[in-house]
Length: 323
Image 1 (cartoon, rainbow, N blue to C red):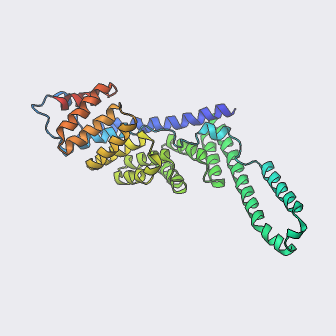
Image 2 (image 1 turned 120 degrees about the vertical axis):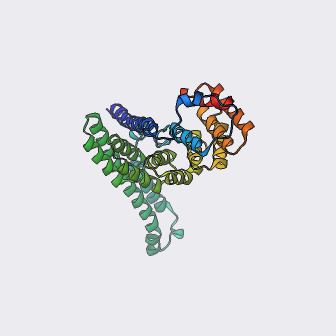
Image 3 (image 1 turned 90 degrees about the horizontal axis):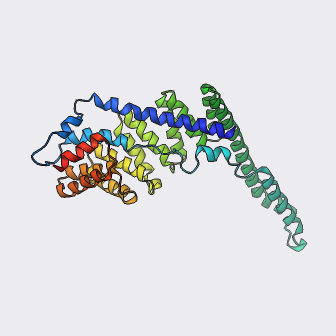
């Protein structure tokens, strides 16, 4: 049953990401500044520096190609979170408590402090144990609600699943698997504003969630707030040092802000980790071109074309810039 609910929850997330990505071509196709594939094939006498309009047109579409979402919580995916036992079962706590009591009983009488002092010294330890037990109880409650939500998803009861995931987060706001599942349900229901709020709350609790930051930035950019998207990615950038997709997405948004020097730096960081991604190389070339560094831009375009993984439209753009 657990495996089935995990698959359903993962499907909700995948469907949500697909829906968000599926909107991009239609959203940009109607814009007057969009550059058509036919226009990209039109030869130029020389590769002049790109105009700001051309940069914005290509960068706008590229930034969404760069936003290929990983699992929002890389270190606690749904499967691992649902199958893993509680972090500190109650018997362990009881054994620790018994061991502490036995140690106190075995202490030499001469070294035993007065009764009042012993009780006073034991209070912090009891408080610490009580705190751990409360945390354990809350996490167990959250896991129980999460299991209810996964079962509801498996049976197609979407509203019941949403309610259960919300209850899980009320019990333990740091339970990221429940937050990830709730975001998926909300996005599938096209409730982007609520999904963004849930993601923001998760980042407020734990900024070290690059997947949450990517998803929130994507929603912010889709609603027209490019600056907010850049700021979201910038705040969690230190936690994504080894996440090339995150860095490249950040570079794409910087490029849309016409911050080409910064975009070049971030594209270069991403390419240092994974050097044969055509769309990243093309992004690097665009920003180099915009700064008048034609020779370096040509090399980036050649590498992008040679990567073999550009879309037909972007392949045509690379060909046009190399003529």
